[in-house]
Amino acid sequence: MARLMNRKVVSWALYDWANSAYATAILAGFFPVFFRQYWSQSPPAESTFQLGLANSLASLVILILAPLLGAIADAGGLHKRFLLIFAVLGMLMSAGLYFVGAGQATPALVLFALATIGFSGSIIFYDALLVDVTHASRYDIVSALGYALGYLGGGLLFALTVAMALRPHWFGFAGAEAAIQAAFPAVALWWLIFSLPLVLFVPGRRRQDRLAVSALLRQGGRRLVDTVHHIRQLRPVVLFLLAYWLYIDGVDTIVRMAVDYGMSLGFSTDNLIVALLITQFIGFPAAIAFGMLGERIGPRPAILFALGVYLVVTVWAYFMDSVREFYVLAMVIGLVQGGVQSLSRSLYARLIPADRSAEFFGFYNMLGKFAALIGPFLVGAVGLLTGEPRLGILSVVVLFVAGGVLLCFVDVGQRGQRPNS
Image (cartoon, rainbow, N blue to C red; front, top):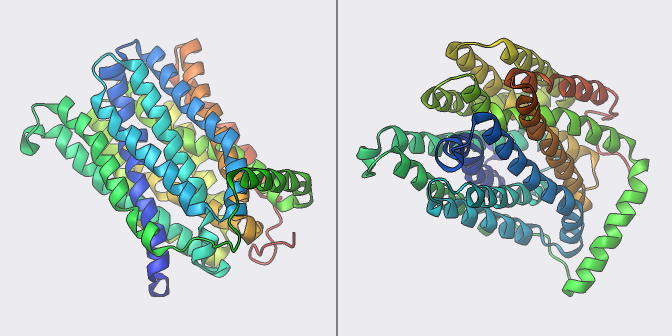
């Protein structure tokens, strides 16, 4: 591990620490709670549907933009610039939620969707930089380091904002509502501060020729068309992307809808927030452990093990009826969530051409967001139509099974070496 601790690797990994504040405190934590109780004020099933729809629309935008922007970034060496554009969008929209008043559901959803687009878009180019900060033999552990720092950093800020909400007078707030509103700009500030090491110390890819915007669009478009035409020759990449699309749907849906699901079962907000904190702090060492496991047995077997755990967790969630069970499930998810995410990223990095990493990670994130387009909407729609939220959660089981089966057929070569392309 000590060999990893060079400035470039740590600066890259700290962006996970930075943006995970949004993923934890807003995306999975306070926004679902605050939206239902403060902004929406609609019946629970309708509120869940609105939240799922906002998540799905944000994912649709990334689905459309990701491959082309990735190709343009590779053509122009614009990875860091695009990362920062999306990150700043996410920061500004997160801070903007502070100004949305009670009952203003539409402005809240618009800002949330734009912030999620900024968050998700920045990750495309962050993931693509993995191939620039370390050697292929270290992808598993470096990717895991990023996710581990994300769990720790996101968990620390989330713990602070939870303390603000539970003890608002300690922090000078009039009540819990004011404290939660203040959490949104706090996330934006945290995101900004801990993005600075990546800006300062992770080098971008230099191009000798400076291209005009129109030339970049044309070249990026040609690269994208060329990749689409030839991607059929990269069978391991195609199979992996299909597998990833299926199983990450289940993972992302559980992340985004867990708090809303718990509220539908009648669990208190305090209980749900504690469960999220449990997941975050267990996720920190667990992500590192999974990185080491991936180096030892290979990333694919480790991913398959994590998917098996998710399968059990999803079935268990269907039958769950106590807060104690919710806590246990939070602990189990914390053990595998970072592992399946980090090892998927590192396995994919082995399969793609390094000089087209942003373009290929554009497809990777496109499929990830396409999964997030279907999953939250499915959970919300099934719950709305049947009046039974448990059936919505249970529906994701088939995605873990299908994704795991397809992953078994991916030819990762000698410990997942990149194929010729």
